[in-house]
Length: 121
Image (cartoon, helix red, strand yellow):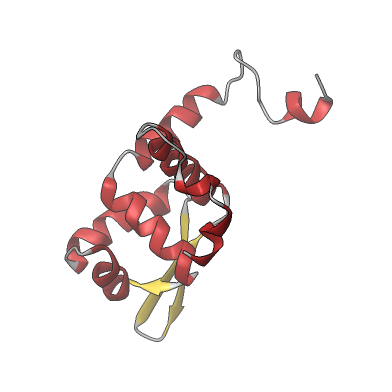
């Protein structure tokens, strides 16, 4: 096993396992997954834009964003009175993508992400 693998806590006895479970718990909500997907597409959005993108009220989206911000999944930038949200790093986005790919596998057949033309989606 490489030193890099050991250093990042990629072992069954790692102290990061419990924190990873908390991350999965944070992502175990359809609205939060949709927020992450919207931010992945647009890179930075306001609460109102995110609310439109995920089909929820701005108040509900704001509550989800507060949780995602506490978990350091999203970060903010203020421009006057407006606050813009963006993904803090690529990891949550990759987790969501992999979860969706896994969901596609559960449907049987050849998942869409295995098709050569998926880049046009």
